[in-house]
Amino acid sequence: MHGQCYYSFAVAAVSMLIWSVAGSSGGLTFNASSFSMGVFFATLWILSQVFGFNAINAIGYAVAPAIWIGVTICVSFVWGVAVFNNPVHSWPGAVAALTLMLVGVCLAASSSTISDSQEQRRARQVSPTDSGVLLAANQKSPGAGMAVFGIISACLCGLCNGSLMVSLTCFQNGCDAIGIRKYEGSVLAPLAILPSLAVGIVVMQPVLFFLYWGRSILAGRRPKFHFSKVAVSGLLTGAFWGMGNFNAMYATVYLQQTIGFPLTQLCLILSGAWGILYYREIKGAKAIGTFVLASVIILAGATLDGMSC
Image 1 (cartoon, rainbow, N blue to C red):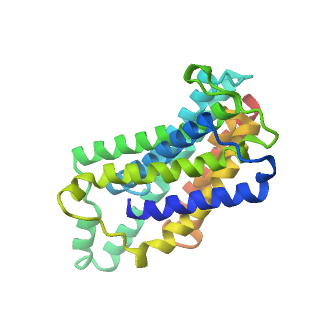
Image 2 (image 1 turned 90 degrees about the horizontal axis):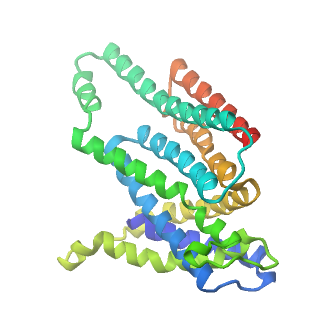
């Protein structure tokens, strides 16, 4: 939550910068409907970050993102079909596409596990005595309670993440059930809503920060913001995420909720490539081969999803 403060500030700033350069010609679109959607977006987004952080701490970086990406794909698809009536031209094809993407996500997560197992065997072969303590530490699995907590946190992260674009869809098309008026401006909806998203983040970040740290603050323990260690990485992460979110909104507008946002979860392939080529987190022919196979399956599922919806 310390890093989230810098992260949120950067997302809000980048969103306003994009709007000022590309969308301000249509004037400021800010009313009760857009503000409520901005607050809704900000609440879901910040909560998804908190749930994701707790999930990774509990069950690890390989497993947690695989769970929440799978849930994100399914939740976004359900929103599009069940709520926003996005057309599905071929249900067998759509179900097969979702299945392929979920299988690919699971395989991508397993590649990290395979790599860790290979590293442990290599350490045992090189130095059986010295590696005993290391292997024991690496092989410690989280307790049942912690594992359940991690899985629930990852699922909640996916639920929030998969619902992010609901605010944009309601803003663009209107949602009579909750009193949201249809946007009728001249600028495209992803640009017009950016000021509302930025304000929503600025409003909700302090609220959720206090809810997260409230008991400690009331007990006299003030959280430290670790500016020198966290600020730069938090601001850069927020800048990248803000630009990516803008593109994700365009994908949702043009490809709808059933296709557009689920396709953004192909980011798993790019992050895996960073892990293999730069950070060397995934090593060994078997582990890398598994990840490449997973990437092919995910791309096949994404292609089939586009053809079926």
